[in-house]
Length: 322
Image 1: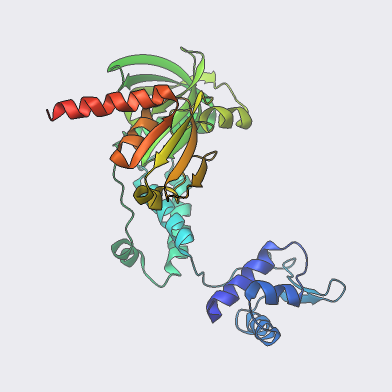
Image 2: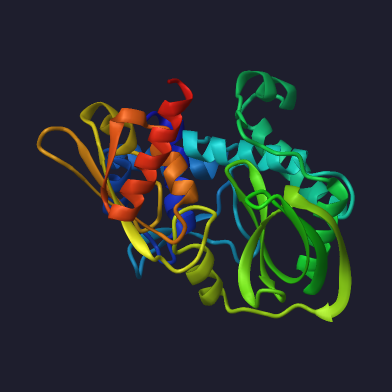
């Protein structure tokens, strides 16, 4: 850990702790000697004008922010995950169409640009030097996105004309918007469908027309929404109906073992280097697509229905080349 990293780390420790932190704790967490900790504390006070105080009763250091509020360092140092998160947010905000949310998003955009400037790269230089590639994004009509966002924030119902890819049919629905979800570079509307009387997920790019209704949207508890939309694999939500058990070859395991496919997944490395992954799911469509992309590097062990579905897809693919 270099000198600047230690200063930033010390700042994080003091900011996140509710009670004074002892010098021995600082030595352990910063992995440095008592003399180095003392020097870091002096530099925070002298060069950064930090409101750093010592509490004799608790034998520890703390930020006294009662008079001036939260103290922040004049510059920030990012790790890879933090920088990626900021850049992703910035790009998502840039790609959101102008209109309804401009007044809300502009201050956020300006704030992010100021934060990113502390990386010692200007906005144009960041765009040239750091790339976030979007591979499967689909175009969303700006007027529909604005109407959906408005209904969502105003807690109003929507009347939509929705074209389903699976059946190639357009239907009219009245829905109570619950959430907008950005998943795999595309936007989805989580809503209660009054036609089906169920919670449903709608791809925003497949909404052909929509307008706000006067009726208030039905409200659902966060726990209920999480249980429905987040419990199963991928965007095809719902209560899990089965658990897929996948066996990845030693070669593929070097990638998959480090991947997060699902919040409730269970994985284990086997003695021969292969990797066994268990995933709960409700709808197999998206799961099958992810299995197929690994080709011969994966085998479906359970359940039998999922294994047969993958076999059927592979056989159909082989027939294309015969």
